[in-house]
Image (tube, rainbow, N blue to C red; front, side):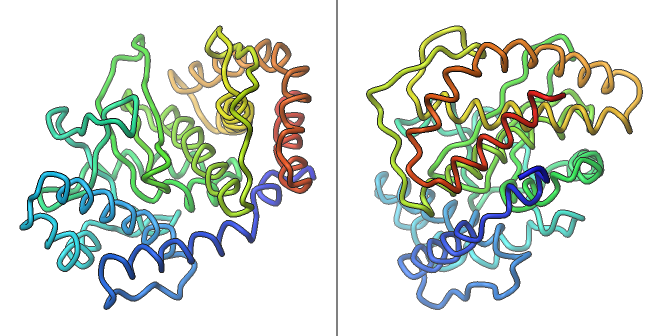
Length: 300
């Protein structure tokens, strides 16, 4: 497999997402209808999980008013926050830090769409989508970053934080500098994590948690699950950077070029452990996809 878009085209993911969306909406609101349009499915999938997470949090607090909202009113209310993009319908939010949830399900505070949610700053995401489109990674981000939560603006010299959590698939959380090309890189990174989570779930694969590997990205030993995630997401950001900077000038171009320089020695350092760790994935097709992405990045 040499074409990255083909590598990431895994039919089992779409089947899994449709089944999960149906099951979640049935639990919350039997009157909900799953969209037949494949382009609309990523957002429906993301919103179903935001509703489930919000309902669970409300039930835990014994907040019956908010619980009722998530079950009966959230569907149309949240759908109104969406807007059309070249990557499909998206919701972009930029919540205050005080609105972030601190709990046991994530090492980092995260945000759940709710009755007080308002739209964010889509123009920056629109511009980032343009950079993503020229790299051929638009289907990845279109399917796995349907809800984009901009967690804060940082100076170019500051460290950017981005993350995804399994409880909110097709949602990404990321800081930004205001540079669309750099934001595109981080959307690719987190969409990659969401893709791999969906692929593992769709194929019913569990990665053993008793093996660790040295991560050159963290500088420490990591469980196989986290190590393999890094060996998938970082190569994709390197592929993005190599392709996007051909169409980018100024500070964004310099950041992407620097990203490539940083990733090359890390991929070299991870190569041997990756070859061993990827054997833990029981599905041959998924193993091949991860290996193809990693080895493609190694050629850049």
